Image (cartoon, rainbow, N blue to C red; front, side, top):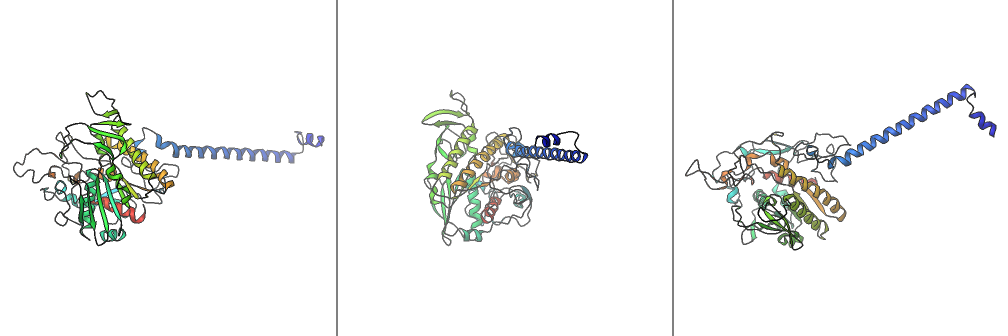
Length: 442
């Protein structure tokens, strides 16, 4: 046995054995090299998938607001941040929030004369807005068709169901748009309103469908001291560890919920946690720690999503992302205006810093909640209206939030509204998106 072993290891064994050994060595070297290459390749792909979202200075890779994805994306690259963890790849599923505003000669399905639910501030035509071009555009996703909202079909699907829109005046703006569209199929009957007419409920008796809007601008408990024009007499008191019970007490009454926050967190406010003042946002002279609006917004969303994902009531929840405004040359309180008459095209405008910060927080907290909610049986969907709304500077009331603002003086200085939307107007397309998400489960 020893002789055989020594003979096999002898460098002077016959040539045939030498060739076989050489081939074996060569094959082994090739296989080892291939394995190392595959290992490195997989590791690099995994690095791209896991690490890219954490890059702090890579906003354009994370946000379709800044850089919408191409039609097809390699498997090793992250998909836009506006898709949940359970979303399919772009090549397999259309992203209805990435697209363009295209001319639509058919115009809106209702007018200020055919809808009685319009608030005066959004009734741009009655208030004297002279141009109508903003009415003739529709949102068109890049890789699929977006059907118009079908009021008859919606009411049929929602028979014996209830919806609630929870949030600030943008949520009220949205529900008014939905009411106007649904009124083409069946008029709504108002059955409740609060003292200030900020929270309301309507019923569609033929379908036993109820629709509510609940005023909860911070989603968390707050004490607000301001008038109808947004002028404050004192700092807002914000309780970051308590949800606003105006909506939590009624949550189990609703089959569907559209919830949103955002803009109110930019206001000057003092923060409370555990019955203690912990800091503030923009409170000069108060000798308090400046924590920033982003601190409060993240805290609030964590609390909201924790409530939803742990609730025994599994409502279908749509979380709507922040809505950009279009004030130019100032803010609402300093002479800012919005007098554009056509939509922007992609690349002509970027979101301002505060909107980018808010949306990043929203996407991060939504992703966490979507994972938890999936395991708990909760249904969470992202209604990502930020990018498509950013492209519509022409759809706001501007000076026509007031009735005939230039009737007496064509050079009158008036406060502009470049945040809310004219009705009819671009916000009607939000309901097209909701309907598509509802019907096709996008």
